[in-house]
Length: 81
Image (cartoon, rainbow, N blue to C red):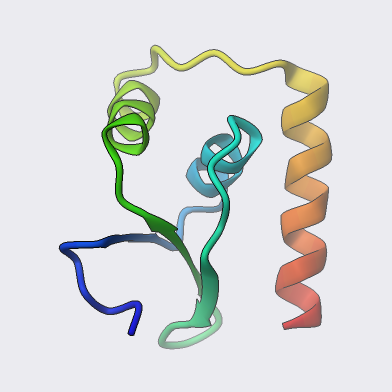
């Protein structure tokens, strides 16, 4: 279901997934990929594309404490998964 790249964006980059989710975009699912990596799956949108592009250009700003707290939440979800 979540493998359709037309509707879903998938990343195993924890820093990127944290930034996306701290900015209010919900994680649709988490899937174990090959090895020990976890894929975070988000519904595609223009806002998501903008966030991802700004992240990779080094232009994305997030509140540091909110980012750190969300990172802890995602790590907990990974280890419970």
